Image (tube, rainbow, N blue to C red):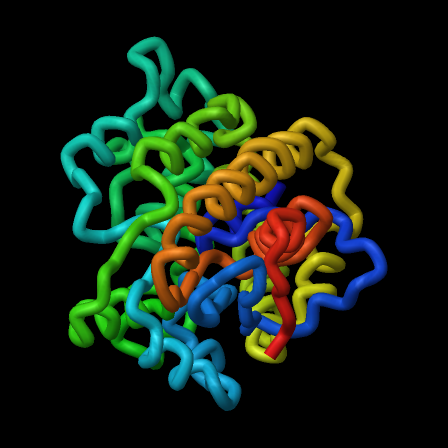
Length: 288
């Protein structure tokens, strides 16, 4: 469960089996099937770690060339009020009803001693989002913005057409599909495991990301996983369903003109990843 909380926090979902192909690049070119111009697919990560900003040759040229920038969520369309309201649990639930007395004390003491925050402020918030405060605490932040935000701001500077492939409420509803009890367990795991493996796992993940090694990311997300219920939620809701939406919604834009599509790296590989879904639509998608 601890691993899942980490991946939620950086908007990386579990990667499904990737067959015989080696997915060893973050950067892919889309062509063929009657397209007027090449488009591009790039796997992002919500991190400010400088390693994620060491772009391989051709990435920024493709970005600069593209007329359209497509991302998971168009930041201009995010309704902050609606977003915050969806982070609140159903009125019959609270952290005190979901945690045992001992668990609540452990989490409360951690928030007070390590985060300088009283836990009661998060009493009604979905525990998954509260857990992010723990898992994101020690992430490296050499860059001013996270990678996905960086691309968005650059696209705005260049006055590109910017579009979102998902709606805010679709993403929030995906999180909300996780039972509160499982979310609460994840919060306890995040606190009790803090300092043991979380930071190491994150560092290793970013290392593999920077190398474009999606196969290693696959290995990290699938090894020693015993929580079948959570694995199914990840696969069905956080990955596969969203992959189909992204591929379907990106298609009209790549037909319109050169489009730079930047989505979470875990959405790229696999039999039902965005790469294969675009290929099934008749496009040639090759690693750059």
